[in-house]
Image (tube, rainbow, N blue to C red; front, top):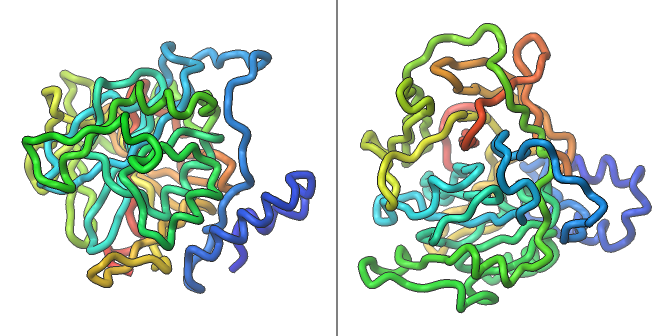
Length: 343
């Protein structure tokens, strides 16, 4: 199946030859089982003085940091990494399957920055298919395997990995390698001065739509990990758990978001694998699919749609109306469309 970028490329000839080269390069990251995996054209970074700030932040529906640059950080999500630092300050938290059926986070910041974030870990190919919707964001990670470096170089991100922005990282003596690397978000962004300002990525915030099923909790399952989300009427958000235990923040309190989007997306095998021979999953985040949106103590059946990698993801209710989110942090939990499996 041809990727969405290839299907629209003919209508975007003005994007230039470089865009086509980039799309072809990242399409090669998946095997013949994948679809929707090409990379977007290169995006120009920076903030135009002629571009007005949005009325509310497109990532969380708030009113702060409307033109702050976008920073994405890869964070470990296994027991040796907990409690994690800086996750509670993110606007968006993606949960992605990685090798062996475990998960890893990608936290996206703009409206505010924590003092430190981590443990920072290595990037995965699915990140390069999620990030183009943000324009040309700064991307912080500990590194990648050698075969993937060329795709990082061609992706529309500012590479502020440990290799390129080493002075913005430090190691904690309280933990063992590789679970002790932390980043200073302000220092990281100094190495990406032209990172994109926030843009519309498809989220819509506002009063809850009609319907929805009263729901107290939801458990997301991967082959080797589980995360739970329990509604707290007092805190007006979903409190996270990991492996059946409270998922706490290094700064104190529970992790969790005002809205949790459980997005079912086909998970296939990429060409990459770790030193144990376990293949890296490739999550198909373009196209359409089903979702469950948790907000205000209810679960809503929804549909997600993302026509291309430079487009955001829109969510609609069963009757086709926009699925509005509660204002505040959003978690996007990516699950295989089907039973949990290791591709």
